Length: 179
Image (cartoon, rainbow, N blue to C red):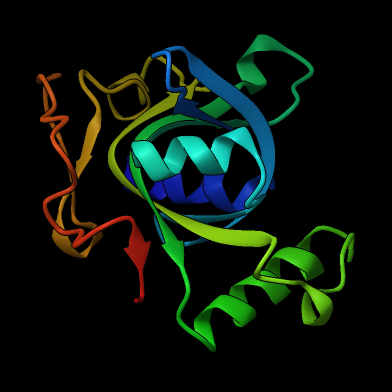
């Protein structure tokens, strides 16, 4: 299942990311992303509702999938993840360059102003994979009984669904990644 999740992350470039607003309602928008293994990186404006939401609560829900011709072509994933701003150079600039290059150069990575833009990393804790291309012989591998849980070092385990611990990310020292 982890290999399928990685393949879906590599095959797509746009995702829906949902944050929680101050009133408790989810706010969902489409953003471009790049991935590094199971980590997902996306760029947002510091003046956006999404940025304000992430400052209050760093939990996100992400959905990724592509267009399809028939139902059997549907493949996608959703994840519950912890978001943190990436501020460490040169990592931040390298990832922003990958975002720009991978999305047709829609912006100049070298001219991006980090006083008005922010790069975020989403580190998943749960991943659910959808794959309608599964045949009866491989359905056990393609349609999991429960979600993939992601632990330290991106180690994934598949097991029956369990109630997640939605407390603040125990590995994060705060909402900032890379100091």
